[in-house]
Length: 126
Image (cartoon, rainbow, N blue to C red; front, side, top):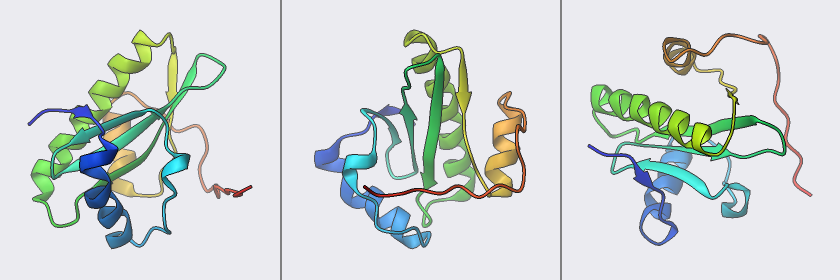
């Protein structure tokens, strides 16, 4: 099991089906950053760069048909890869937002601390 860069040519169909299976709205490929981290058949996550030393780890998703233990292990690997990439890009901290208890617990095990609770994230398509 390895984390590799996301490939639009080979990975988008699978990733799009995972998001849909989890009940997420249609995801516009233009909203994703350059840094996608993909574990074949198991999980994906995205690292956004900002104009500050803060990065944003977001849109984490697992293949809903995958073995849950393997998918969880893949997510842990994506967190580690995101840390390495963020440091290499000069980031000093990462920000994430979740309402999934398992992802919150995993994030905390990876050194994240709760900054806000009971928030609603909003997005506006321009």
